[in-house]
Length: 371
Image (cartoon, rainbow, N blue to C red; front, side, top):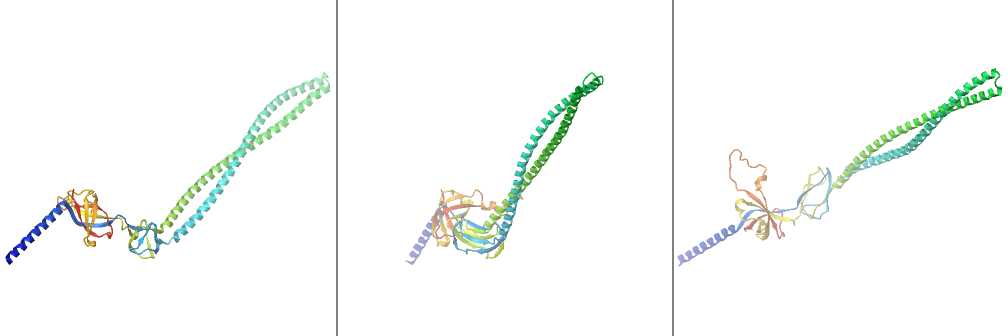
């Protein structure tokens, strides 16, 4: 009797082991199974300042939830504010200097326009008068030559008593009067020549003013360039002052606080690590030997160790196009001819339908249904 019971127990155990083996191999055949799986977050960021300086305030603790736009830490902005004030004074001085040069240039242009107009008008008028007066003088001189001859002729005739003395006096008086008139016209001509010279001098001075205006314009342009450069520097400093305040870029939880204030840091030094606990996914390193039938869209069962074997549903989202070893720090070199065949693993991203209770970094096992 005891022997039969023992035999029955052995048979039952054999059947159970056989059934278990069948289930195991059947499950492994229908699913790609891996225990090299981890829960990760799409939004895990090391937050840093964009400027150097002394961190005076650290407002959040580790594991503390924060909202997007919430102030996390502050760098002392005193030095930057002093630099900003200095730049503002320089810019104010440059603006005043540029405005003064603009006003001077404008007044010179108005004066130049007036002087040029007057000089041009005067020069044209004087030239015309000189031309007219020159013709008159020439005509008068021609007439004077004739009167000189007439006077000599009349004088000879008077000596011979061929004419009355009154006739001679009349011709001589006319000649003397014309001579005086010519002398007056010559003086007028000389005065007009002096006026013409003065007009040309005014025009020359106007051209000097034009060169002064051109030099002023160059100075104004240089001031404007400097002003533009100073304003750009001011904008840069204002941006840096804004960078002295560190804000949360998204809703999340402070995963790590890297140091305590006060502390002088360089830009780019990590201050906080911020994670979004709702943006979780599962990353699997799957052997190339198990890749058969695995493709995006396949259902996945995820078992998280920390949740006492609780199963979570997921779906294959994407498969890496290259193996994980492709980007290793020391890539394989087979140029020498030595080669050891190693099993390659590929990263598979799995979306998670339910994230309650999950934490980034948890290990898990996955079973990907083959199709």
